[in-house]
Image 1: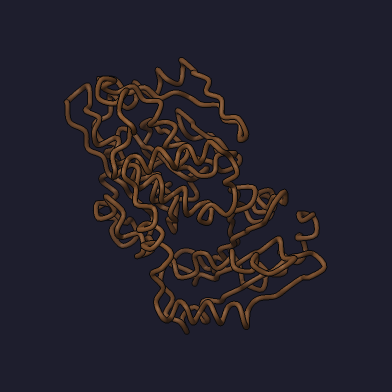
Image 2: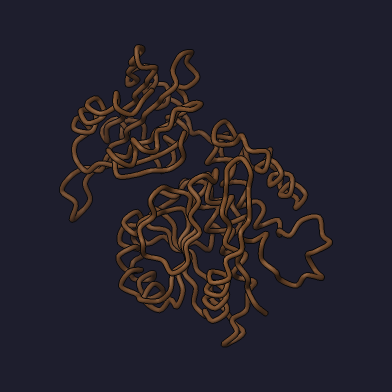
Length: 372
């Protein structure tokens, strides 16, 4: 049995598929000959990271190795993911590197293929990236962020895609496996795969509020619904699971910590590590907060900064920076050039090692250059 990946050249308004024989042959050989595949995604995994990694996990788990007939597929994430993703199919199988390096290091060292989803640079996966790069085995990259670093053997990088899950969908759709079983079926996706992909599409577009104007995206959604996806249940599992502390922290952030720059249609929210502690912050509690200022009339740009305390070996705090915008007002170049990140035109992220005050000062020094 062979695994065929079709390299796709994507145009946002008119998706065109160009088959690249060299990439098809490379990907086929890598997957067919692998016995120990490790799937990795970025630190602080969001819905797209979880969805793309788990969709590939379920899909690759069904592909036997040409060499042995057996294939071990493992997902390793750098640190904990939000509890409101615990329900996702396969989430219980994910190995978290932070606190479990002794268990993960042998898997990373023994892998004969890495599948990398939703990040463009090994630095974005911390120590997992360091261990991955120490292993000279082949790597496949599936990502939609700008300017991918040249570290993978086969690259599926399309910044115009709404999410990495969209690319995963298109790759799986292009695979020729058991045509008699799939060619006349309403969907080529198992419910597990479809659920993971839909979760990534939904979360990385803010429930289809941005980066979601292509008709092709809704064709994808229709295909996933035909596979049995329960979209309302997924929305409820992700967006309606606030704790009391999280809701109170959101109120505090909007009332006390939001700054408005009215002449530039811009909002900034900051939360220090001490402020997060006041509300017993848990991973994922600030997800979606950056979107809220966009509900204000005449606010078209929103930035959120969250301080993480220094960890051993990192003397400076890490400031996580999220960017959102509306319409034809890109923020990904700003995120990339100033905060070493990237992402969608309307939804991006970055980081800075330093104090929260330094991050705010850099924001105020540069924002006029990047907003229209």
